Image (cartoon, rainbow, N blue to C red):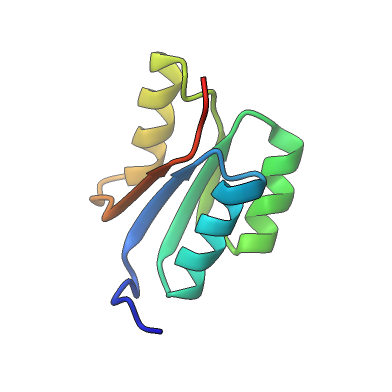
Length: 89
């Protein structure tokens, strides 16, 4: 299926496992450049390699300072076309 996401920049939070990682894989499979984040650095590194993420950073998106930092790293001057936040408080 072609969803027209080739070269779209996507940000997925909570992407080190489960549904977040599945979303990141699906987006990458459609050709999106995926940036992922998660609280667990070890799981995040493995997930980034598995997904083929364009970038990744450890962050707790329940913390406003972390959100600002990780989104700034993800956009790096380019608008994000897809934002997925699969996190629970």
